[in-house]
Length: 162
Image 1 (cartoon, rainbow, N blue to C red):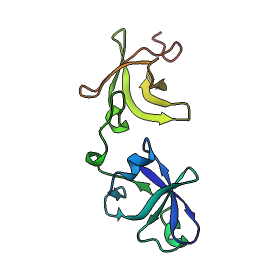
Image 2 (spheres, one colour):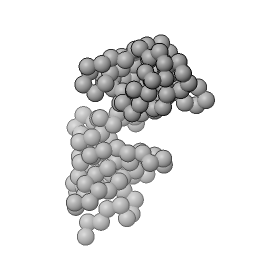
Image 3 (cartoon, rainbow, N blue to C red):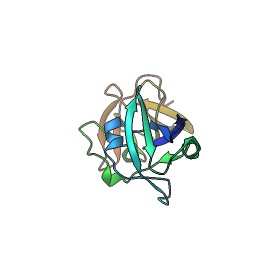
């Protein structure tokens, strides 16, 4: 859901690098854990400040406490996530989906979803090479999460059957 960033000030506040679609989604989750659920983080507040998410973890009383969290990943239970709208997907739902070209050829399976700044990209292994297919209406015809199939018509040059 996010990653703890740099400490802010001296009172234990810390930046959170959000991995959710929006601040309200992150803030609505109520329960936040480390990777193995051995630690649950509570926050005195979570707010946006100068376009950055800043929080005060309840146990942090000074800068050193906050710095001990830097780079730790924040997880939440999927059943606490908000329902997705049409044409919205959770990354976890896309991983493992079959990528099928509109001509019926199997291309590969989604191994990751990345975003380097210009939009979400489906990462696939195709003929022993990593390729990326933009997750947009120009390249993706349909997404069937229930059957784990994504029908694509990738722009010229992304794949080559030869």
